[in-house]
Length: 415
Image (tube, rainbow, N blue to C red; front, side, top):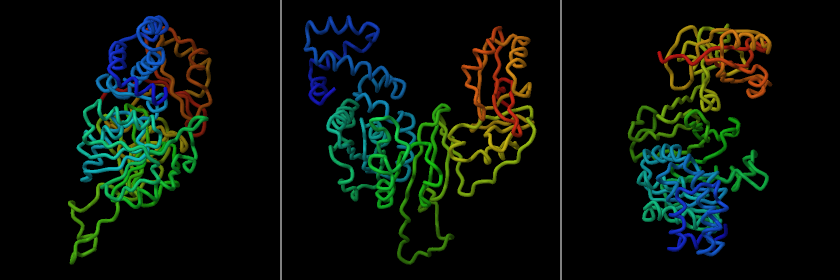
């Protein structure tokens, strides 16, 4: 889709076409296209069908109400922040007292929409003409045009000094897929960090796989998951507050009203829905290891990425089953939002024959396979053991005290 094709979608004819494709079935696209081309230009029909497909895919990320009013580019929909994550981040930014923000590398405008709905005035900037046009159309379609100004420009040339905060989302995909080197982001992470340091408040969205050693010392690093899937990491910055004339600068003079909600040097894991946030500035040492107890806890991915497994283990009175594996075990069941609990019935050395015999004996037909520290792929295991029966079980392929092992159990009831 080029800029002219997109502009045609915004005409009355284009809008009527899109409305008629609200519930179309992609399996009948050829017949639908043939029918529509009898009455409409072929280029417009192609653009409308493409947009209908993108809207259907976007429902999982934005929900039906917004997805079928918004516009997308093929790459823009994939790279956009999930609405629940964007809303959480926008609420956190609004809680800092931010009323205006420069959203650099805004994409199709998903974050700008969440920020505007949180009451923040947004300058949304993207250098790609089509992407900027889509972001502008989305602001208008959702009734947020008064709060969102979209500007087509190179973000490195935009003056952000008049805004309370800056949000940066460097492009992490190129012609060959994902980009793992932060300095190969567009713009590079080093430029984003320098821009953040110059702002009163700033947040940089980055890939969750960023090494901890790459996090600037003055930033708070947050890993965010949504319904168990790690979605992103965010580097938060807050400029030091200037003390009022005559105010003491000792720590005792700091009050809640002047303490920023961004803590330099902190690491945080946030789980959605909730939110549930676990944060520390002084990480605990690695937990002790010990034998597998009655319960096994699988920490959320955000907890693991934030290196906060020890904090969760301490809260559960638990230990690790292996010093290199992020599974926590305990003898008692305790409630926690930061890990999923399983009751373990069997701990066995790894062996497919032994596992197959046990599953057959217990009539296990629904088998959930989880792995950590094992080379066996879950689907490969299922094919080999061929589960059959009326019961369900979960098998963990992992290591216990360095030895390849199988742990069999089931989700534990709520304590």
